[in-house]
Structure formats: structure tokens, C-alpha cells
Image 1 (cartoon, one colour):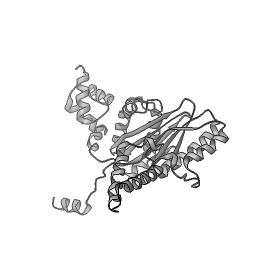
Image 2 (image 1 turned 60 degrees about the vertical axis):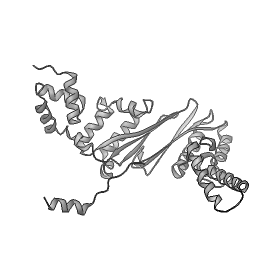
Image 3 (image 1 turned 90 degrees about the horizontal axis):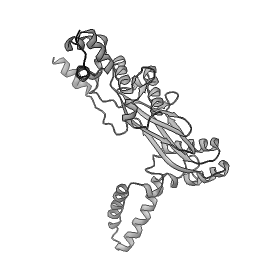
Image 4 (image 1 turned 30 degrees about the horizontal axis):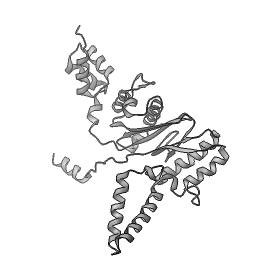
Length: 308
């Protein structure tokens, strides 16, 4: 009987996109014959994964899992919204989020972690799902927040079910105050983050390159007024203060109560919580953000088929 080596398994995996254990089994079933093993995988429907991998996966779901002081948000993409409504896919996203909670939150760590329901890695479990469901899927992004004392509040917008939806937010609050109060204000702040997408928690934390670009634009706009440089400088400073108020979380008007800034609302919550509250982290994942979707010309496709 032919010895099945790691190199053979690796080669078959690269050729078919199938999982490591599936490749090993295929080679064992076919006495190491590579071509026969490929046919065996194709017959089982397992090698379909690599054929789907070139397609754009811009739909899917955001998943969230939390444990009070720690929470994670993940983005798992599919090609179509139809698959995102599939019960198996939704369960997969929940499962990936729960696995992510046991890692450091990086995509690489989550991908390599064991998915309990299958005993395989998350990567191989997703590949199996690709073969079963018939669409390309991918674990694209993830973020994890944790506090020693306090809570990490969560919010899912456009929820498709428990812990899954189109937009997920985490907000980490550091405090020794009442947990119920922290959870309540944290969720409200998470809803605010979902609505406004702030660039940073505080003005001084806004990316310097972004601030510099805004200042340059304001300077050019102010120069068109023909005013002296000293006046222009004051005009630009005023516009920059307004800019920071609009993009920094704590200085934004609170969507739950626009009469207060987010920072002021948190100060109010401190009275009920019985302790100081500090926002120490936030994460916001919007499904498909930054993905270039492929646009198909249906008429052209039909014409091409008609031409043979």
C-alpha cells in the first residue's frame, strides 16, 4: 500500500481546495493516485470549493458573541444574500463568532482554531460549507475587545437572528460600577456608534493624516475668501474644532438624547452606576464595507451564450 505523505496531502489540497483530512482520506481510498483522488473528491462534491474561490463574496453576515467583560465581532461573507438567509450559514456565522471569543480575535487565530461541531479548523469548516452550499465564503474581518473591570456592550443592526445581522458594534467600558447600568449605557453608545460611525473615541485620537487632509481642504476654502492669513488661520481653527466635534465619539450629539453629547450622557450614567466610566474601545463592522462588488451585464452574458 502506498504511503500517504504530508507533501501528497498538501499537493491535493492545493489542487482541489478540499480540507486536509478530506485529501488524506481521498488519497488513502485511492492508494495515493492523485488523479483518482481528485475524481473521488469531485464525486463527493468536496473539491467544489476551489472552483468558487474566485467569486466575489460581498454578502453574508456579521456575527457577535460576548461574555460580559469580553466580546467579539466577525464578518463572514457569502456571494449572495440568499445564502445569508440559509439556516446552515447563519449557524456557521454564530459558531465562528463563538470560536473567535476563545482566541485573540485576529483572523489568522480564528481561522486556525478548532470548530467544535466539526472537529476541524474554522478554515476547513468553511471550505466544507462552500462545497455543501455551493457558494464562495470567507472569514474576512474580526475585532475583539476586553476589559478587566467593566463590560463590553454589543449591538447588532438589521438583525437576521440571535447575534447575527448586517452591522455589528462593540463598545468597551472600563468601570467598577453597577454592571446593569454599564450594560444599558454601553448598548446605547453602541447604537450611537452604529448610526454615526465616529472616527475615534476622542478628538486627539483622530488619525493625524485624516486631520491634516481636512485642514488642507479648509485652508484652500478659506483662501478663496481673500481674507488675510491671520484671519484665515482663525477660520480654519474654528472649522477644525467643529470637525473634531462631529467625528469624535465623546463630543458627538448623543442620538438617544441630542441635548447631550455622548461624553455628557456617560457622565450622567456614572451617577447611577456609582463609579466613573471610561470608554476604552470600540469596533464597528458593516457587512461588505470596502469590498468591490462585481457588476454583471446580464444582456451581454445572454448574447455571449447565444453566440456559442
